[in-house]
Image 1 (cartoon, rainbow, N blue to C red):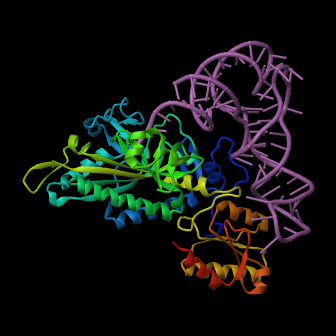
Image 2 (cartoon, chains in turn blue, purple):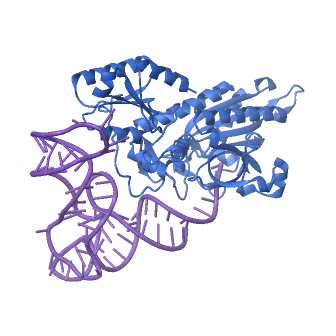
Image 3 (cartoon, rainbow, N blue to C red):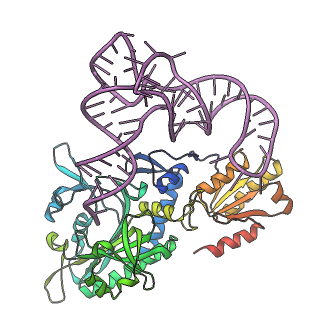
Length: 419
RNA sequence: CGGGGUGUGGCGCAGCUGGCUAGCGCGGGCGGUUUGGGACCGUCAGGUCGUAGGUUCGAAUCCUAUCACCCCGACCA
């Protein structure tokens, strides 16, 4: 992509009404546009990040046998009444609307009910189980107060996976497998070291659940972390009984702020029972399917990663999710230099390396500032200086020094850094 | 939902206390000088001041209502 063609531009100043670092940087860099409180449009660069995150998640879910589908955003009230989750007293984040004929509809804040109904026709016998189904979908939640930029919105993207098992043992096995897949996701997204499985409240689903919490000052949760055991407890459930059950000691715990980047629940028959999702077992007996649900918020992750990795100069993207691997800046308009840069742009792309090519006729300082703000993992400079040496100048986004190396060496470097 | 704050060109702000031709910076157009860390000079365009009422000869400035946004708290599948 040529920077001269990209319709978004960077801004020096952040909007006054955004306080969170993620919103400030993402808006300044032209990754997102705020539509209204808690509602953000993803612009081309932002969408690339979001899609890259989705792809990582998708690959890990597929790897454990997840089958992707896509449920609807519009919801039929009837199915939610069956589980007593339509009433505003029970679920207070509903956005509700109506058909022309006054039939009530809702915008899905989560998807257990419609999913159960959708899979029901296909689940009859024990032979049809187990399986995992998931989607990456927009969720709508009428939060009383949106905040923290893209980290807590009223409209946001969520990957939600659901497990369907015959027995508790089978459910446990799936649950564990999915938990491991989640760790892989966070590692690939570059926040694995700061992300901890956290014992938490089960909310409306059950007494307890597991959250994945990324240690981050902008987070909304307080967790108590045992770094040695790599396990944490959310303050909302911290008591002696819980500590004992997890075999951790209070004095080993460190209090930290964290952002929830995933939450997994054991549902048992909470939804299958009222909605009649049953199967016939080997002994001809009807049984309720045992479910679990597992969420990750890709749009929130964009914010968390920004909060965690962004610095005073701008965004910093891990190689795996950066919109482009390389920010190529050509300095000056000398014919030979421009030609060398054009050739390099073609060469890198042919080698499968995505490049944002800053071909604009602006001063070097502006290109460097934009390179930092936009946060691509590598910045390459082509100028008279580098041309004389027959090399290219390479700088990692967070590095303080530049290196003069050959194009071939750079390609090798990128290969080695791929996770 | 309780408390606090803010709405003035695309963005950041001044002007409002003590009413009466709406100003600055960034960004944008044009011309020129520049070219390794957001350059400089000149010039031009762009707002009727969130919205609706009211007071007044006269309102961005005062009053009322309303909408939106932000922060703290409560809430959070």
